[in-house]
Image (cartoon, rainbow, N blue to C red; front, side, top):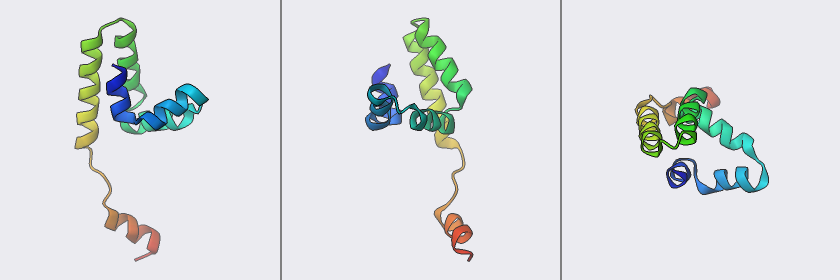
Length: 83
């Protein structure tokens, strides 16, 4: 379970939260990627020791994230350069 979580959110962000208490970047990454409800579901399943269901929930959340429309770089440049 921890390995999957680290794979999604990178060891640096998770490690900073765990070892140094810098939780804001991790919380921001989670809510941008999965939403608070998604994290709540994964946490609930993990606390109930339903590891396989929690891993499946992570996979489902990741698939939903990957299928979301992402802003294009060209559109970003146009907005900030005033083109």
